[in-house]
Length: 219
Image (cartoon, rainbow, N blue to C red):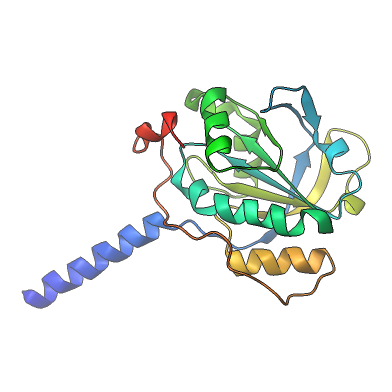
């Protein structure tokens, strides 16, 4: 009986830990990633993605929601990548979803995010109708909310016009595996795989607005 109980505890612990961790590798996918133009979270106009990529070596688009603990697991790391490689050709741009603009702004202010951010939707009710949902499900992302979600774009390989900006992309259906992500970025920037650091570490929780309702009004 004690053996069965101990086994049950181990099994439940494994399930709990698995539910907390949505880290995923960088994979190549054919998804016909569409160009977009979204309102800037700062309030000053819009950003067109194709125009944003000009003059960069690598662009990382990250989709996030301010209430999502999975995104909070990555936020310091993503800011760190921006600070470390922004002057070496990496451009990070965030696409926020599923919350009020005031909550998004509160989040970027609290975490002192200095990379640009735009927004696609302003309510959890929009989940099934967002461009984010359409694109990530085509990419095989089966998570309910799908944040964070990453797209890597190499400007030299992008479509110069039309609705589709890239037909083949590298992407992440979940949180970044930090060492892998930094190695990938360094290689794409021509820096080699050395000098990989540990940027931004914290705990992962389940990404669900229903279980993180208090986070809607605070970072």
